[in-house]
Length: 259
Image (tube, rainbow, N blue to C red; front, side, top):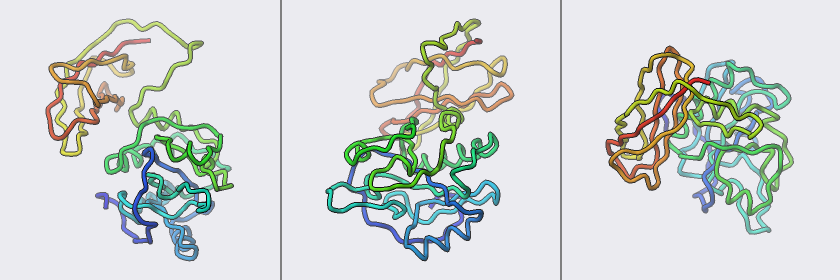
C-alpha cells in the first residue's frame, strides 16, 4: 500500500491479463468518501483508490498489481476491462462539475504518487469511447466515459491537459501556437534512480517561469529512458528520469528558455 494513504480493503477482480498500462478516472457522483465506500460494499464495485479534495482524504483499497472491479465487462466478447492493465481511481464529486485549479493541482500529486507504484504514460483521451481492442491496447490516462461495455460519462469534460502538465509532462504544441524561445539556460543534472528505475532531482535556475525546451543524455544509453520536468515555483525545477534498468546515476543535460 502507498505511504500516507488510508487503507480500506476491498475485493479485487484477480490478476491483470495484459494490455497497455492505464489510469482510469471515475467520479463517485456523491459528496463523501464514506458514501462512496458504502456503495462499493453494496455493489462489490471496488476501485484501487478513492480520493477526496474536499475532505483531503486519499484511500487505497487494493494493491496496484491486481485488478479492481469498478467497470462493467461483457465477458462474451473475449476482451477484458477491469483486468486490462488498468488502475482505477474514484474521485469524490460529480462529473457535471468542472474541477478547479486547486483541485487539479491536488489530483496531479495523487496521480504522481500512484504512478510511482504503477507506471503509465502521460497522455490522455478526449470524449471518444474506445472499442474493446483499442481499450486493451491503450496506454495513458482515460475516463470511465472512454471504456467499452460501459455507458457512464464520468469524470466529465475535465482539463486533463492541465493535470498532465502539472505532473511534469511537456504538452504537444499545435502548429498554430508555435512560438520563439530566447535566453536559453541549461544544466547538467545527475539523477539517482531507485530499484524501480525511476528517480528525480530538484535544481534551481536563475529565474522562475522558464520553459523546458529539451534534453540529452550524457554518458549512458538512452534506450528505454524518458525525462520529465516540473516547475515547482521559486526558480526550482524537478527533473525526473524514468525507465532505467534499476538503481543508477543518470546524467542528463536539460535546456530551458524564455518565451
